[in-house]
Image 1: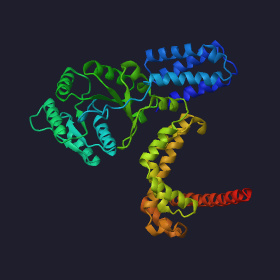
Image 2 (image 1 turned 90 degrees about the vertical axis):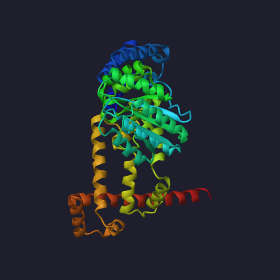
Image 3 (image 1 turned 45 degrees about the vertical axis):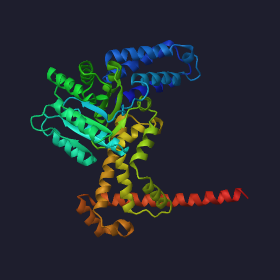
Image 4 (image 1 turned 120 degrees about the vertical axis):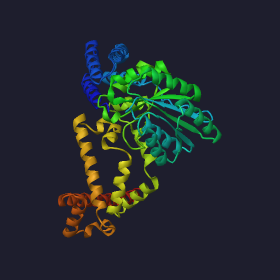
Length: 447
């Protein structure tokens, strides 16, 4: 997400940093490039125009032009304006009330039902009792889909009864949620291919019956500026308390995310960037601005790792690595832990740009290659017996051929895995020797 915009902006700022002193012409030229980058990223025309105007005005003062680091000052002003463009401070759902209620809305294909399941999982992990309500009675298999998701998450679900209207279903579910003392109830309302009078009337009647504390629109970021038009239509018809942007991993431009708050005034609450149930993240304007400007998002990475990685298992793995005791069973666990964190492309986005000096296409190619390699190594290890995983040095040619045939890979792939694993062992030995030398040196210097 934002790969094209990020690359363009970083190139512009790299040129600015080359100047020891900036002139008004330097600033205007760079702002012209920023405006072009925003438009190419599918940002709304008025949003791009106003954004550049504000940045240019703030950069024309003595604070920037007379600074000893003028290029960095411009980047700071752009960062500040990006944060404001995204909505300023991070906004949360209103989870007060007995129970708290969330009315999920969206067009067909936006990922509304899946996102409802992801929210249910997220809140259940925080210790809340969550009730899902299947209100999408027109889309084929929508109720079945939410039922499956409720089973995966481990939540209760209320389904429509024969002849029941959507507002009647909402009223019944609301009463049930109060009586059974649920903490949160999520209404997965019906979608359409476009916003029409029938949908608007149904949502208004449903809202009157349930009185939800949160009216949230799920938007498909990949449809670009049309998502902004959809958000405006829902806001004007029903009223919105927040937005969730999905499929951000499928849009390299990201213009919808940049435009939607500025145009509608509605805060972006969360973003979805994958198909896994864990692929839903709170939206932090300051962190997203940092990603776009190539400064990474280490805080989100640490939070994600803490949430998804088994800390006890990680400590055991670290101890084994330090003592050169890792086997292929451990290597498989490491791969599976990495997969929980998401694709390599999404992890790259969280790393500072200076740590990965490459353009977007090259970065994407490396990320894809890394993902494919992990997938390949995982299938090879799973084709081994437990004894082979625990004794990788004893895997001779005949075993390697059998392993390759068992997972549909080439002998060269198996050899590559074992070579890579052997290199890890050599590195751990070197770290262990280095640790001993440092301890010896510390002991010597403290005498």
